[in-house]
Length: 225
Length: 225
Image (cartoon, rainbow over all chains, first blue to last red; front, top):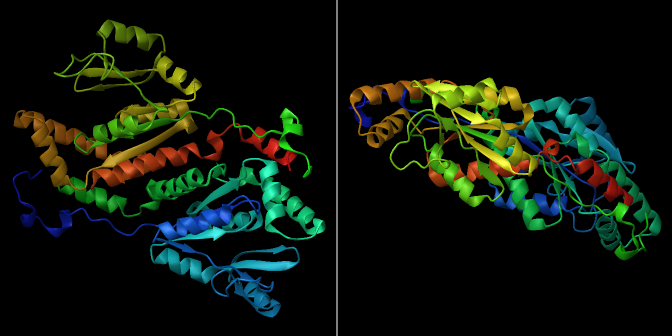
């Protein structure tokens, strides 16, 4: 305890300096129409340390979708190649189309001290949890009630009743997996839900296990006492 | 899936309604002088669902301390009685004085759907974790460096060097337990630390396991689809 020494006199060893954080994988799942995409976009816009994970898919682009932003659109042969090479963090088949998350971009972002946001379904969430363990934080977004969800699914898709029914069945299946997630947000009010989601990200970054620099930091604090 | 039915026509069984939340115990520990008390006061002022746990102690009140607000000041006989009756959630002896948290007030607050904030040391935190398990969320506040902590301990106490040295030794011991906490905040900037602490509380409330009404809620959502 060297109370009289000025900071200039101290050796660099006793300076408490923060090191790199351990990046996390923030997984968002929900049935379509529960507001997940809006929440994800807002969070990305608000947080410069968060990157969106761009999935690959074999389905054709929908109107307005941009290759490399919404998805990377690839053909089934390329998908099979990535899969065989073990380069996919998770993959799933939905309505006959293949979707996956290539691992490389995610690991690169984590290495750079960034967090990565995933907008994926329960199948993808399960696989990412298995492969990435404690680095995964998963959040399930629930609609405020069934009627609202159904209305949104009907408004959104100017589709046949057949397609709407298929979407509702898929929504019910997705909702059935809410119990596998760390956090659950009932999206009754978008601003409240967004605050909650932002709080989850902020809090998870403060978890002791996500601050691998703390042992050295504490050593320096004690040395400076 | 009854898309055409209005909300009025639905039976109350299919209405998705939120039930009571499961209260949590937010434990804050830190060495004296790291800013814990200021952070605790701000959080209490900002959050109407959070109650401060008032400890009992056998030490005499310090100038400005109010009985029932800062502590409940009791004599050693009363302390022994509470202890023998198993009414203490945790207790510790610090510098020859006894401190404890009576269990009844805490359980009452939790039952009322409130969260309870604890400003206690590592000994108390260990005991509360043992007794209350998953309901405990623990946060350790670290000073930005040793010099700042030492300066705060010296400024704060117009005391003899002896007392200052004893406080610094106690601070070092307390800091040694940072690794037992769920979250760690390095208090370099009070506003940033406060935001982090508020985020931890907000996020923990959104943990799936703290929302025991979700199974019923999800059942009603699915019924309304």
